[in-house]
Image (cartoon, rainbow, N blue to C red; front, side, top):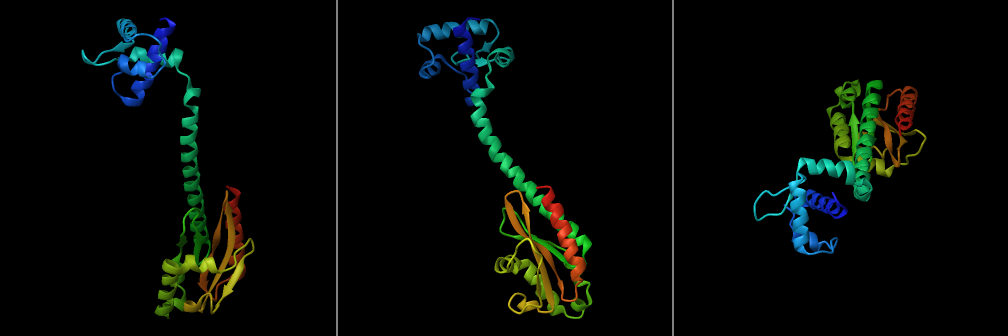
Length: 237
């Protein structure tokens, strides 16, 4: 195979990969990569067909590569670096989506872990999303305060489902554990409840991580639990 034939084979395969259409001499000349006549191109294509590298699906159509043509292309002519920019662009986009999913999974798992450690609601704002994830509502509803007061129970459920994200945007959140205990302006609809919240960091994201429960909650135990799980969450960032 001479230099022009190898260049022609590569051009036909590249175009066929892109379009899935048979490649004719006119399209090859329009690419500007060949300085010769259309007859010369057709003659070279015929030789490549005779050697088993190309085939012609229909009499009036162009050529497409055979398995032998692909094998020759991959073994001798393919240059991955030519496609590196496109591959890296696609990879970078998908990599960020991958890490965002992993960030969210880590936060979900941390909330699940905390909800198993405390008899209260565990929650966290979700990275890359304007929402809050929570678990453990059933923990809270088993507490005597809520079993004896259905309105309080419904107030907690409403806060978690509709207003927790807005509430977290109003309060101070940093690396310390902050305590909002029966706070009129923070927990006005559930004044017999308390909220504990701290900041977590995952890669380049920051969010709120905490506990909501009755004012009677075990603050010392819950503080240690929040710190331990938040540290675990951040250790895998």
